Amino acid sequence: MRILLISYYFPPCGGAPVQRWLRFIPHLVRFGYQVTVLCSEHGDYPFIDEALCQKIPPQVQVIRVKAPQWHRIWQKIFGKKSTIPYGRIPPKKSLLTKLFIWLRINLIVPDLRVFWNPAAYRAALSELKTKPYSTLITTGPPHSSHLIGMRLQSKTKIRWFADFRDPWTDIHYLKLNPPLPIVQNIHKYLEKKVLSRADYVLIVSKEIADSLPEGNKLVLLNGFDPHDFEDTKYISSNSFRIKYVGQFTAGQKPSLITDLCKTINREFQLSMIGTQLSSAEVQELRQSCINTPVLKGYVSHEQAIQEMVDADLLILLVNDYEGNRGMLTTKLFEYLASRTPILCFSPPEGAVVDILSQIDGAKVFSYNQISNAANWVDSLPLGLRCNGNIDSYSIDKQIVTLAEALSR
Image (cartoon, rainbow, N blue to C red; front, side, top):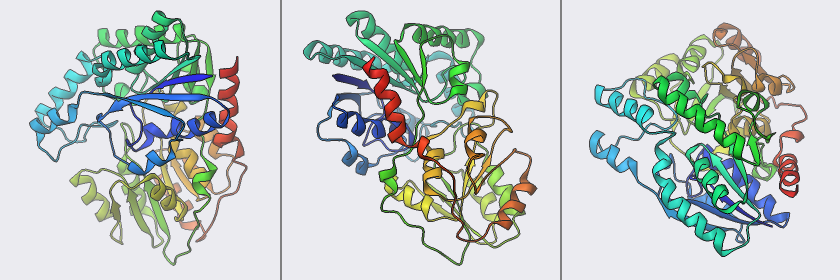
């Protein structure tokens, strides 16, 4: 069986957008599927991680289609050192930045990657005419990719799976920066149409699945790859090491970490790994810690895994916005696999709470429970490792669900 996966993000793109399918693909190949990936070439990627290309099985054909490079236009306007906001609106914005963001949210639907669609559609149609494919999969965000899938399904009658790594109309940045009502209605119309037309809709959590319109929905967790942790080892230290690994997205509050650090009584070393902060946020963070925090830029996925394992506490922030109960990031499952204690700030109910409540050494606090969280951190012994059965969250289990859907 041949599968054509359309994903705007794919290695050498780094970061969270590529991890889900980069984990699934090797298993699909092992199950006997022939996989072709159609992705953007020189797209607007949040990070570059060349090492991830080594995880692509040699049997996988990768078709790269040139994409508009909006970051170049952005840098011409705002300076070479500026970057397009990815998943998070800057805390302090100039009037010009506010204008550009307003135009982006209200005039470009569903997202900025939609300008890649014509070229991607032509390349995908050509590929489908060349070889006998059984299944087409589109993954989003960007949810504009699903519009390519819907058009290809209509043209070729191929079986189509739409994969939702995040909500569409309820995605965090649209909830926190609401577009005009007419634009919201367009999003809802497109979302409903995609779910009604797709043969299967793969969704990262039950809560998000329940919030989406009617469709043939199947929950498929992100999971973690046990092989990523085979060569990692916790190295003890005299210092209590607290780490946050990854970017901030809309609704995640750096101030929670700042306030926590101010309240903790024990001596500790804070590290922020691959996190972009404003100068004001960096200053506030430094003022909140007795020891100067370690601020590392983007690191390879392999290095990020080692950072998670080689820590005494990992911080997880669930985005604070209406409809956040289904948030299940890729990072959560890697945190679990690291066996490092986890402190999570989240609403009192939701998918994250359900999972972490089963793990000894993981604790969830609401956004206003800073003192309670600090007291818990003060009580943790140095070198503690988490217990709990996490096998059901491994990619080995998730791939069975996917393979069963593909075989129907």
